[in-house]
Amino acid sequence: MPEQAKENLKEFNGIKKRIIDALKDEDLTIKQLTEKLQIPSDEVVYYLMSLIKYGFVKTGDIDDMDEYYTYKLNK
Image (cartoon, rainbow, N blue to C red; front, side, top):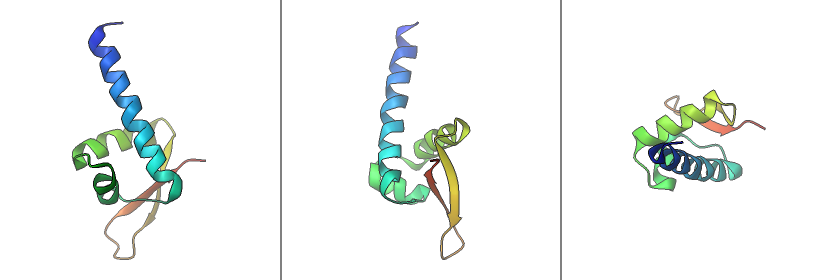
């Protein structure tokens, strides 16, 4: 496996763990995840959509203002 691929996988797994840990306590929006994890929103979206694709996370309800969806662990 090329060294760059190993580094990318290591980074993905680290951020995956941080997102999953953040969602253990409560459902969060992308904005809340961005603030909590201190990661740019475009990166949060990228990793979150990957976690949805592979079944770790799923879409929750829409917030009270009907603006943002929450995301939660797929238990």
